[in-house]
Image 1 (cartoon, rainbow, N blue to C red):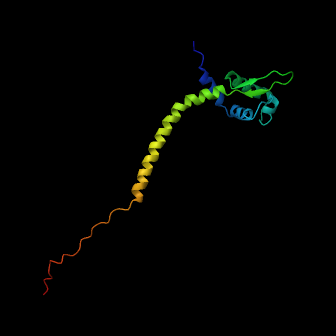
Image 2 (cartoon, helix red, strand yellow):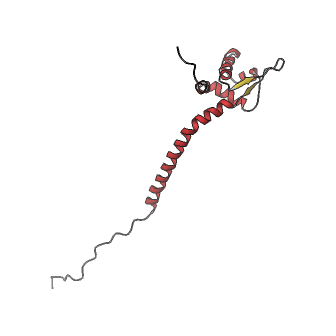
Image 3 (cartoon, rainbow, N blue to C red):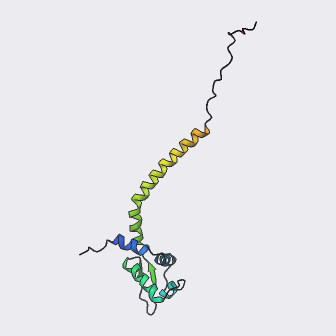
Length: 132
């Protein structure tokens, strides 16, 4: 018997689909109906409804009940949880990129700094010409 997936996994699974991400992007502008959400997609209304059920199960959207109109709205809390989970990885990458930037700055400084002049051998005046 498998344990039920954790909430973060359910959320990430819902976000994995480009159609569902597009629906969330539309809902970020404000609540709207299922018909309005379905309009830009080349799929049936039942197919869009399946996507909405996945989003609803993940807690990413909610549906209101106003007479005949059932508006869908974005629920940001699961996205905050994803952001918190990603924060530790973001910090790690920012630290690595900061070290890389410092290294590249150091390399660039070395390239931009002119090398000290090289001493050239001058002929020694103490040696006399033997042809005399």
